[in-house]
Length: 89
Image (cartoon, rainbow, N blue to C red; front, top):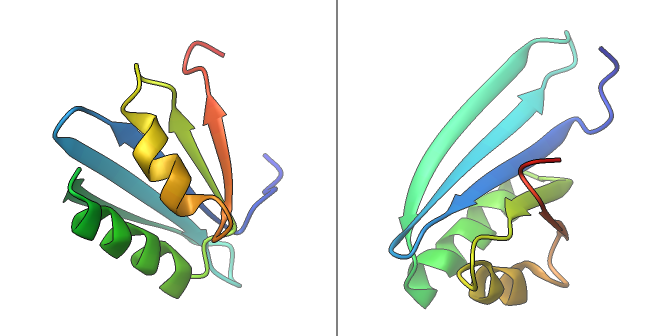
């Protein structure tokens, strides 16, 4: 499989919880995975954005679950490349 992004994050959004999985491919080709959970309060979502920026995340993909994705999208937009995707695809 060809690596397209060296540092990417998938986010699963729920009403009261956000789970982020950051995948990083190091220079030797080893894959490292970090999974962190955050509440949906603004301060916690800002911590998530800061963490992703500190880890030099290149792109974020999140599921369009109801309307719960909108606050996080608003915080990520402009800070990182962010995609809202359909999990079925």
